[in-house]
Amino acid sequence: MDRTNDVITEYLSLAKPEADTKESVDVCQKIQTVVKILYVYALERKVSIDVRLPEQECAILGHPQKVKQAFLNIIKNGIEAMPQGGAVSICVKQESQHVIIQILDEGVGMNEDEVKRLGQPFYSLKEKGTGIGLMVSYRIIDSLHGKITVQSQKGKGTTFTIRFPLHNCKNIIAIN
Image (tube, rainbow, N blue to C red; front, side, top):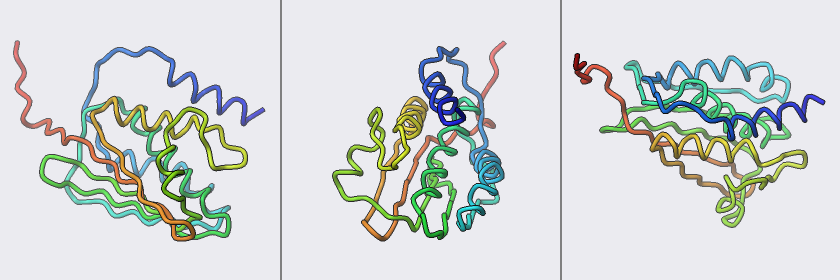
């Protein structure tokens, strides 16, 4: 029942129309929130989560809940990719006019064909997966003018690199 509810919730978040109003979202704060949510889930699976965040705020323009959902789906998949336990490393940095988020796992990894299919509707490598979570994440990232790349090797793990345009809210001039 819980699984059905999760699938329906993710599917509805895709189909739900939203106003196009975006706001400044602190990526570091969202990553910290997601790690807190997944902490016990990771612990139960013998997975540690290492987070490295910059001292400065790394803000993007987006929808806070959707940004959180995208990170949640990707990090949760990383945890689930390690049936024997392991580590997920998350690194956020600011580079030029971009915020870069790298999520690395020590999981089972994927071959080139599997990586190419990620984000496609209903494609999953998990026995009980629906493929909706990553599809939602890819669409959210794309809708915020972000780019996602994946590097993976069977038996070695996977690295998701997400690049968003930096939103410098200090440079916004209000016009009355």
